[in-house]
Each structure stands twice: as C-alpha cells, then as structure tokens.
Image 1 (cartoon, rainbow, N blue to C red):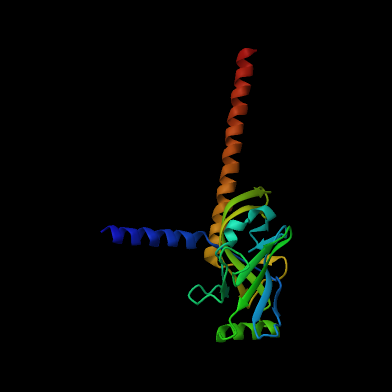
Image 2: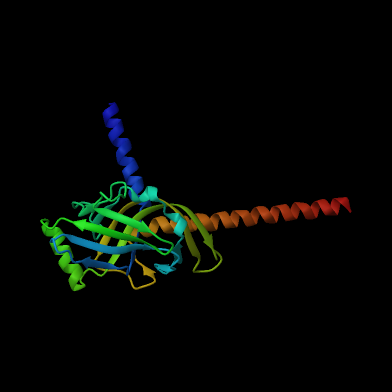
Length: 225
C-alpha cells in the first residue's frame, strides 16, 4: 500500500510540475563549432536578461540577471524541440568542466556549450541542421517562484521574473519566435496567466483595504470634530 501511495504522490507532484512549467523561445545564438578531432560542439544562448518579450499579447516579460543562480544549472538536459520523451544529447552534471553540457552566466545572458557524441545519429542530424540554419534558435523550460508585476491597470502589464527555482532543459528549436517575442504552449501560458490574475486580485484587494481604512479615518475625524 505504501509503495502505491508513493507512486500516486510522485505522479501528482510530476503533474503539478508540468502544469507550472513555462517555456520561452528566442532567437538566441546556436552555432556549430568545428573540431579537428571530429567532436561535435554546439554553442548557444538559451536565456537572455533584461530583454522585454511579448507573451501572447497578454503581457510583456523580462528576466532579471539575479533570477538565475548556479543551483538551477547543475542538472539540465540538452534536447531538440523540448522532446522530453527522447534521449538527451548532452547533460549538465554540476555544471563543471567534466560535464558535456556547460553554462556560463553573465549580466546579459546564459551561454551554453554542448559536446555531442559524434557517433550518435541524432547529434549528427542536429549538427547538420544547425550548420544549414534549419535550427536557428534556442529555448528553455523552467519554473518561476519569484516575480514582480507592474502596470497592472493597463491591458499590457509587465512581468519581471526575479527568481527561477528550476530549469529542466534547454533546447535547440526549429521555430524560434521573432526577436523580442516569446511563444509557448497553451499549458505553459496558462501558468503565466494564473500568476497575472493573482497579481491583479491582490492589487484590487489592497485597494479595497486602503479605501476602508480611509473611510474609517474620515469617520474618526468626524467623531473627533
């Protein structure tokens, strides 16, 4: 019974994680670096900071440099088009020199370097597509646990992501969004819109409380006078 309950708990946790996962796609750099020994190395830029992006016309978003720290880059897979069912082409292990997927964070972006297996047909296929320009962009899947909303009264508010708790993978993608924009699945967009709804509800609640306090203060002044 305990084994079954643990499996149910694990399934529910994974389902909730998938629900909260968000995906961002940009025209970041993804290039093939030629190696004389036949090794396949791809370099790219899956995450950029302080670049405002359009999220489905609902709001604009930017990622603060401090939103990502070394802890979320320790175990990240490198995929193609977010294919979680496929075998990773590379994987960061503690993001050190021994990993075949490595990241370097600056104030502007997160740069990636991936060493692919030259014997892997999928790696050869991806490298060819990158060299031809058929795979022109990058993307990453993540969970947000810190954000600041502004311009909530407008039809196009701003979301600044201040902390990312987990990065699942980075992907080379076939269909990157236009520069300065973002595309994502309906499931991913749902999580963002729920956050926007909560932010607007909290703003409205704060206004109601403020109005009640002002009303009580006015009544108190009338009594005192």
